[in-house]
Structures are given as C-alpha cells and as structure tokens.
Image 1: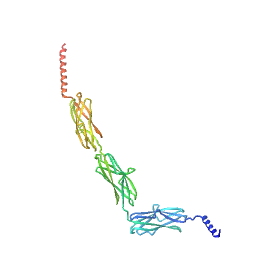
Image 2: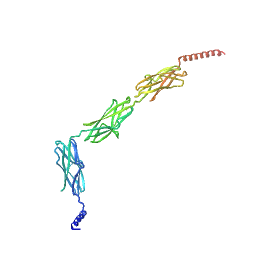
Image 3: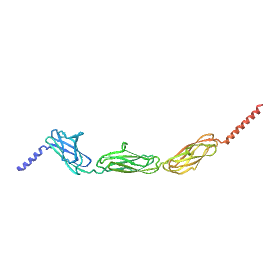
Amino acid sequence: MNRKSLLVALALVLVCLSPVWAYEGLSVATPYPSVTTGETELVIFDLTVKNYDLPPQRIDLSVSGIPDGWDYEFVGGGGLVDAVFVEPESNTKVQLWVAFNGGTASGRHEFSVEAKGSGHSFSLPLSLRLQQDLPQRLELDPELPFIKGTPDTDFTFNVALRNQSAREVLVDLDAQAPEGFSVQFSQQYGGKALSTVPLASGADESIKVTVKPRRDTPEGTYPVTVVAKSEAAQAIANLTMEIEGTPTLKVSGEGGLLSGTAVAGKEKTLAVEVSNTGTADVTDISLSAYKPSGWQVIFTPDTLENLPAGETREIQAVIQPSSNAITGDYSITVRANAKETSASEQFRITVKTSTLWGIVAILIIAAAGVVLVLAVRKFGRR
C-alpha cells in the first residue's frame, strides 16, 4: 500500500470515530408557513421556539418586512408577549396573530419572524396571500326527504347542515309548513331545541326536524320547506309528508240524545246517527244491537257501503220491547262494525206498559172486589 492510500484510509477511520456533530442554536418553526386569507380574517401562526444545546436564555421576538396595512402581535400564556424563555433542549409555544387593517393590495406578501438570543438568532420566513373573502355557501342534505304517517304521527327528518364557507358562520333555522302544522328543530343527539347554529368553516351539524300535523288533517301529500340562512348565504331542503287518513266511527242518537221511550210489545222508531270523525273513508259498515231477551231491533238500512271522512248518516232503528216487559229502564247497545274500525253506543229505553192492559187490570181487580163482596154477604149471614 502506497503512502497516499494509507492517508486516505486513516482519514476515513478518523471520521468514523469522531463524535456526531450536533447543532447548537435556536429555531422557530410553524406547521403552515404560507397561508391564504381574506380581508376580514385573523390569521394565527402557531410557533415553536426551541433551544438546541444553549444555556437557558431569553429570546426576543419580532417581525420584519410586514406589509403595510397589517397589524401583528405575539400571544402566549393568555396575553401579549415580546419574548419567551427557553431551557436547553426544550421549546416554548407562542402564537403570532396577524390581521389586515387596509391599505395593501391583494397578492402574496413575504415577511419573517426574528428570534434573537444571547449570541444566536433565527429567522423564519412566512408568507400571506391576501384575497377577497370567498362567498359563503351553505348546504342542507336530508337523509330521508319523504316520510309516510298518520295525522297523529310525529314526522322526524334527519338533515345535515354544512358550512362550505371559508369562515365561521351563524346559521338561522326556519321552516315553511301548512297552516296548523308545528315544526321544531333540535340536536340529533340530546334533544336540545335549536333556532340558530354556529358552524366553523367546513364543519357540519346533524339536525332533527320534527313536524306535527293537525289531528284533523285529511289524507294527502304535504310539503315542508326547511330554510338555513346566514349573513350572506342560504340553503333550502324540501321535505314531503304523505299523511294516510285514519277512519274513526262514532255512534250517537239524533242531536246527541241517547234515550227514548217505548211501550211493551209495540214498535218504536229511534233515530241513530253513524258518523265518520276520522280523516279517511270507512267502508262496509254493518249495524247490530245487543238487546234484552225477547226484544227486536231492526235497522233501516242495516249496512252502509261507504262513509266518507267528516260525514254522518242517519239510521232508523225500529225497537220492539218484549210484550212481557214490565215498566222500567232497559239498555240497548248499538254497534257499527266496519272493515277498518268499529264503534258502539249504549241507549236507555224506558218501557211503559200498554194503557189497554192497564184498563183490563183495573176491571179484573174491580170484578174480584165485587165477587168478594157478594161472597161475604152470602156466606156472612150464616
């Protein structure tokens, strides 16, 4: 091996055996050194100031090259600062707040954060691109925009509200619904009622929209429009409720009268009303009666093919008490049975005996009295 090769080998060995070189000094770092902002927005740079193998020391902070029309402050520990203190191999967090104050044209602007310690310094280049505020944009996205139910159903729609703007917005919630319908907004989880929702840029919120129709709402399709509105944006979601009618039967007497009189063995006509108080038609209605033994009840007509919602039909009930019925009050239950529903009502019938039978009874009693008197006269003398 010649002398030159020996020197090269020796140099390599010395390099390998020498300790690793370590950086001594300061550094300032931020995860996002270049930011685009609007004229009305506050920009916050999160800074980390680190001490690499230097004695504990104070590090003064400043900004150089800041564009005209911009204001800045360093913020740490909940207040304004101009310097930080950093231990060896440690770091301190601080924020740089920058706000536009007018006077600078849009475009990219370069400046630096300067950190100066005892004999060491560090410069962190930053840049801001100023542009006009992006237009606000809101979005409403219903999970299921169409729901079926009955008038006594609470229609619940889950709607996602999204802020597609570059800034936080406060969103007002409103709804347009048919007259008599109530609409309530609440949190998806927790049930807290809402009227306004604060949304950060790019954030979304799940909202529960509960619609309560009137109990007497006829069957049909009803629209509800949900409106989300901020200072400069608006979003609309169209919801639809298909309300299926509910048939409801009611049996009553004419004018609400549930009583009548009758004579034993004689027919008496009683007016019975069958009403559909629901919101859907009732079909195939048949009438029947639960009556005392020996009584007859005949309905005319005894069936109804169809009874539309909100309508009433009058039925003639011909009632004939038993000829053996004694004077007193009796109960008859009139029942209306349909394919969809049924109803019943109890009527009180006061029975009186016939006047003819009363006369006959009096004559019989009188005759018995005469016979008794004659018998006493005849046999009493003996």
